[in-house]
Length: 394
Image 1 (cartoon, rainbow, N blue to C red):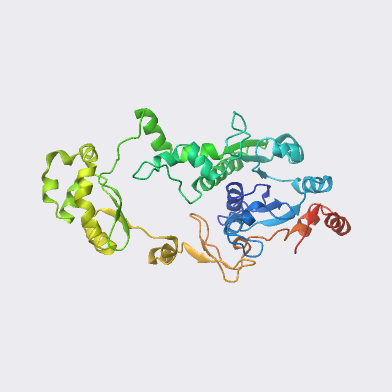
Image 2: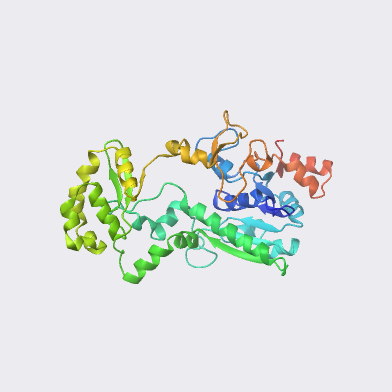
């Protein structure tokens, strides 16, 4: 064991698809676990989302770095039998189907723990294993809608808005990963199997814990904690400003030469400013519109006010701060004509081009090797592939 690869020697079998489960398993691979990605011979659906390069899309690369891949048809008895062989000795098992589907495939918790007696079984679902919505299909945008996020993220006209980044999927992956990490730690003293029930619904709700608690307590949306604050249009783009404390309001007024607003006694309190936000906005909006983002950012920063020019992904990827901290990297991937730009993950060793943990596998890339490790002879492996119950593209 080492700090760089504390999970070296752990065997993870990942049947999940999309990004929530796969990203969780990918994080385990980054810490050194041997993660075996199991998918159908045609590939899982994340390989079909967005622009495709060979077997890959951005979803399949980001979600599967550092894994090995076996392609099995679990609708065939021979494919099911092969996976049971692969499962022997597994430390972690992940699935991301609607409740009931994994049982029909033959890999429910009871079956898997009979094969791998100390397994940590991770079941990732949309709405949880029980309840009236447990069988309903779910993806990130639907859980943004259901858990109140889109209402809290409404535009100025009150229209509920979706966040385009898949925040629910990613937060689900992170919650699942921390739960697995805790379960692995507990296994040192207690080898019994464990079932982890992780849902997109619970992750989406917990991601909003502070606003959720405040809104339910007050019985309505809480007043803005920062007034004026938010996004303002400038001459050449947009800027985000945050007035956290009342003294920040005074500095803000000084910066924009708003002596009369600064002198107004009631505006020393955020609640009063929030009550008059339309009036304040009418005064400050033209000032923002007449200046560039750089001018305003320099002006606010000089006075210690929190602000940031709003960038897009392409701009951020080339930001000196992102580059200086090593956040952005290029990692060659199969099928890509040029190495895609990816992100190093917080707390993990930087990804290095060419190393196994920096490459996502293609469909069935490791089928033969994984089946051989599971005890199958070369002839049996070729017979399985010939029957269509497995696929190998190595």
